[in-house]
Length: 113
Image (tube, rainbow, N blue to C red; front, side):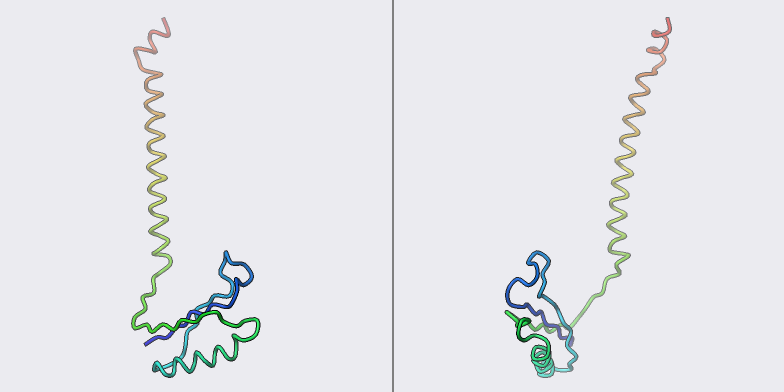
């Protein structure tokens, strides 16, 4: 089992828009009782006075999936690149059609005579 705690300090912290005073910590424990004791120690040592907590949530996690950032962002980049290529292709096709109409043989020959 993995134990994590979400800690939120009192007030808005330095700037409410970026979540100052909010953090998630990992607890080194092999049981729920150990996790609770570790959490109390952490709070007593690091979250008193100006850092006093408004709330604390303890999470018991039985499975963690770690995703590869390159794979996650790569999919996003691939989609953006594909959309960009399609947009360029459409622009080029429209430009081709415009030039084709402009220099069509019949129109071109009429313009010469």
